[in-house]
Length: 603
Image 1 (spheres, rainbow, N blue to C red):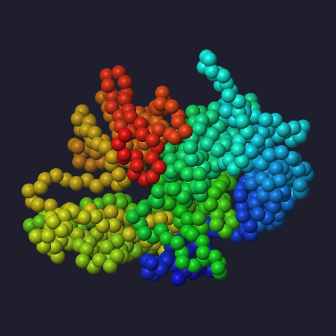
Image 2: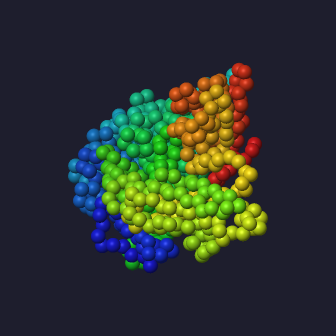
Image 3: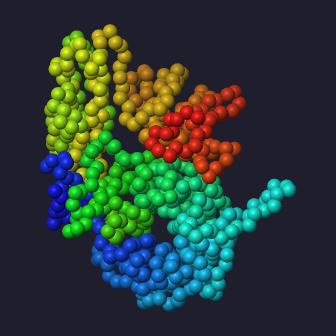
């Protein structure tokens, strides 16, 4: 069964989820249904409107943010595919894919004032601070001057000085069916473009492409940081100045769905991609409703991940009423996100997130240990809190109970509550015979699955490690959240360092204090590390094309070294293992992984 409540508070919807019994799952955002197929959208900060290009209906839809409804349409040419606003917000440009034209719309009258023939299919358009329209299409890169009505052809690749004895190459028009994407920085000084597999950076002031590189399998779904220093191309994060990969939140693929957008302060990326690794993957409360929001409609719940912009580290997963299909944009004040979704447009009140219930726990990894002789009961308590606002109730069960296993030695003494509260987890070995301890039982892991009818996030799960040890076995187990991929001893400081592949950090364990110190943030997916000198640690970031440099005295990342002279190949190479000699840092590289876990493959 699936139903929606008539009462919706702060854009939070509630869905009935049958597979979890009497449990609800909240979502953030509301869907604005639109008849037709939307291809693009753009925000008008002067009028507080969103314009949407309706590819199949040959028109622009107008959505009022204040009124929370569609308020009108403007006709265009056939198959409008891309939108751009003039710097003064008085003109809307629409690229018509089938007509090979550019529609010019006056926003003072919401009427078409001109139709410009482009003589080629326009895949994407953008407008810089100079007011000129940059067009990427089957004829290559063009620039249109609204004042003179002139079209100028531009080079996608920057002019190069060929080596002695080699002739220079000319830029050819792009083939039919190419992938095209353009996006301008907030100040309009820089435009990022993707033409098939070629990424390029266009400088508006000079009217030239500054740099370009080829990367296979990129998506033309682009977003750019407010200061223009970083941008996303599909699930990959790039540095604008060097075009090196700084991180990823999924894998390459030309048929990706999903999109991304930066927060207005540039510190956060909101993203969802079809190749993205699931957040809190142990939690099974990530499902598709069995019936739709409207009669005859069966939408798929989506998840929007909140990522740290520096390395794309997942921070939170927000459950959406529908899946995002492509582009995401933000209002200028950062209060709302707008995205193309299954049924039309999704409005996400991201500025209200701090006031909505968010289920959080103090740890996602615990160890319960008992000895084989006494078979004492081991118990721990995990605090459950509300990371946002409002009322938050929760329920807990184990993956063993959900699968019908009633003999599992994990007992939840407090299986439900109202945050702030705690979940008490007990390991009771008394039903396990000594004869079967090692052979049939040994050490096992179970997951405690948390769910909440009010929480808008994908709830974290708690991994419970059960250790059945003999009395002669020594040592203390300290659980680590995430995935430790390598370990290094710092004898001088009495510390142990672990690269945490999933959390993009170095976990620091104090031998003297027998506890973990605050972690050190590094790049995307750290894999290996080595001492460059007694006070410096170098770390390979296998999700990026760089190496982190860590100052061990301040316990901070102080630099990131590009992989040069390793070339920026069309099939990216990422650093893998690392060592340091008396005068050099040595590292191996592997082809950027194409699936989860492939980074651990030795090459």
